[in-house]
Length: 152
Image 1 (cartoon, rainbow, N blue to C red):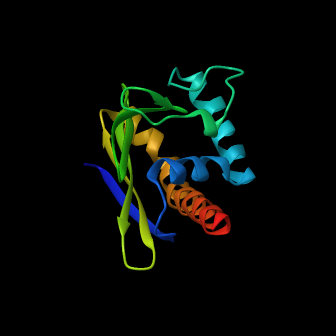
Image 2 (image 1 turned 45 degrees about the horizontal axis):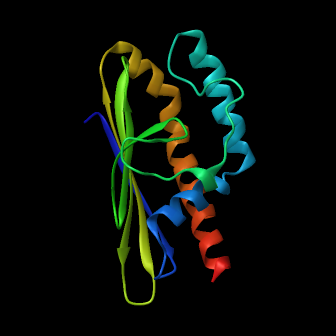
């Protein structure tokens, strides 16, 4: 592992992991969408994976079933309280876990990321991504959690 992190947020005790994942995707702040579009433009130039042009983004239709796709992520596994996603690419491999851990009056939503560089391109790619990664994950997890609390 070359990079790993984990962030958590409180969510309602009855939260469902798929509902949480959809809430996170559906409430992505506009500044993150802008950053992702910039990332896609730049990495397309060097031949890395990006969503197909004109791909529709409909979080409510993503099933998060094993061996399906959730935006640009492949779903590797899904359990009642966890979704494991990620990609293996020529430059780096990564996994993202979205886990729910119940407490008495709430649950913890834990968003973890693990990255393994495969070569120099992976290191160079992640160099400008890393400073934004924490901000992006915290913002997305927070907006998804707030959406679930508002639904209560």
